[in-house]
Length: 137
Image (cartoon, rainbow, N blue to C red; front, side):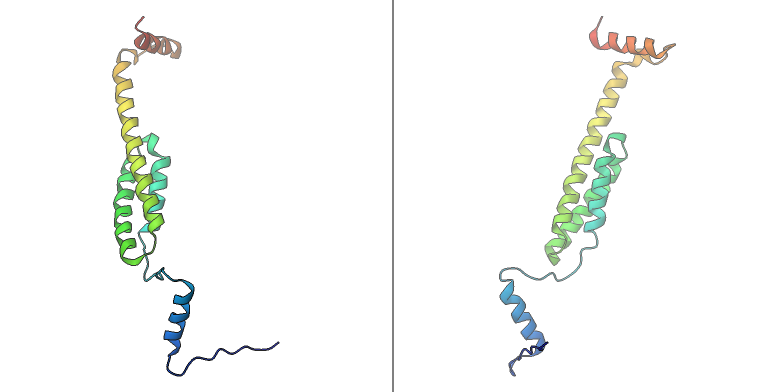
């Protein structure tokens, strides 16, 4: 097994040689220069908010995820790290907020529409009352 030695020109330091070789392989892209600690928690909150948005928990989680996602986008713009996670967080959080609001509006509408059916003697009577409320007969 032969060992291969790479000669570094005398006028270059080792660090500048490593940067030059990195640049020659990745032209047009900049290496990540930092961390984005908000991107992952924001994305996780957005996904959890979306999956729980039909039971009203997703709305508040979506608001928190949206705030963290926007902050993560600002950090990603500065550092170049975590942009896709931040975008995922913003999109899923926004959808979760919209779904939660729609579920709340539907629930209030349904409760108002079936208000006279809340004290039936049986489930069958409740179903019959609700059917009458919606069909008008």
